[in-house]
Image (cartoon, rainbow, N blue to C red; front, side, top):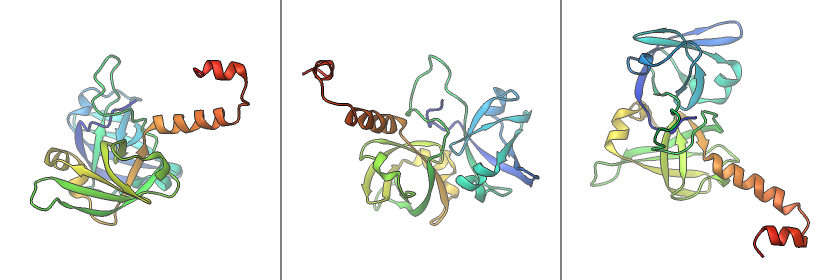
Length: 213
């Protein structure tokens, strides 16, 4: 489990296509201090397995499914990626629960300064079907960053970006039209599942009592 608080911005050193997978080498110096072979690491919101770890880099293999269904498909040498290690048991949950399981790829439609302020606004077009899980003032993970929804209209979601987040993540390297990984709040999906289950359950005295009537 992750929290969406980015620990380091890594840089893609190389991308190599193999028979079944794509191998990426990521230059980094902070997360590598704690990584061990086989550990999970979130790379721009995608949970990957760390391999070939050195003090200044690590490697990860991308399955064809990962390449096809995430923004990692656009990576090339020099691309910046957001890095986060799993949350330690008993640690502070500073963002929100992020699994590293991307729900879909959105597209940046606006990224610019708020007029008269140092803040930035990021507006993303969500992939079809996941907008129902997004609510104003709720949480959303974009490129692995835990963000608060400032507004949503149809499939367009906007979030406010403070200067620190803009500088400390890969957002500063992204442009309009770029794909970004989207993971909605898992609590919204659980709530939907529970509601579906409850809707199919007949009304009985036992159910009414259980639900507080």
